[in-house]
Image (cartoon, rainbow over all chains, first blue to last red; front, side, top):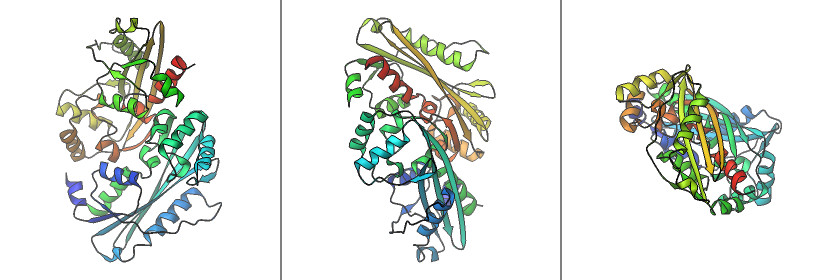
Length: 198
Length: 198
């Protein structure tokens, strides 16, 4: 497979600690290693979602100046946010917070934005993806069961679409399923093809 | 969890040999066993997709008359078809056929219909789900790589959305991702709740 062979000539770094992003890159057959560095996550209230994710993934990329001096390094950073009724929903602080978040998402449609920044030598490719996710009406009991069993404290919006609640509670999406998981991996693959193989 | 406890009081039979449907039922936490029996798969040309999947899942259910005499048995059957440009696309006969199918789906949007029939005592619940799937333009090399590595001969449309090609080649869907995999499991879960727990 020429594209995958071509990718393997580079040192592709996924700068993320998300196990979902890692799994998506592996499933797409893209060879990579991960590297994690603490990054600031501040943004201005009222900033449009696309600007927020673009800013945050660029700020994450800025934390790897030394790695980017290496000519074979390709750095990938990403940031995902959940937006409901125009409000950005972050990660829940505790079980009560997660319960309130999921009660809000229940029976309605929200949006998921992921920004991706790919840097290689002096080039930068910046893009985003956008999906809509519709939840059916969830019972309090179902929400409590999910929070107890899955502890979704590392997830924006307090849920993972690839977990139990995504199987029983999501009626449909519009856009990329993998974007909802945290990385529009089809766009990453296409961008790497254009950047590295042509 | 009361619903899942409630389900476990019944003998739920999934009459399907699809490993994807099995995985979806497991992920939703629904207790079940599988039972497979050869079933006829004939339908009339030109029949609308919803009628085709409804007819086929009912025909599958008709093959289990003795099991349905048991008062605790709940039988679930399903049938999935892929429709492109108004034509039903079946399973590919060989690699050349799979290549032609995927070349047709490349760069366009197709539809996936799944019919589900649930029977319990004298009751039948029949429903379907419908999703649209958009492929980006796939290179011949990517199609050949996928067919060689994944041998998608048991899959309508010659692809599995949960396999490599679904990660690199699908730009988005509209509707349920799990329906595309072969079972709208959120609807199965809701139907079982209504049928068995209320």
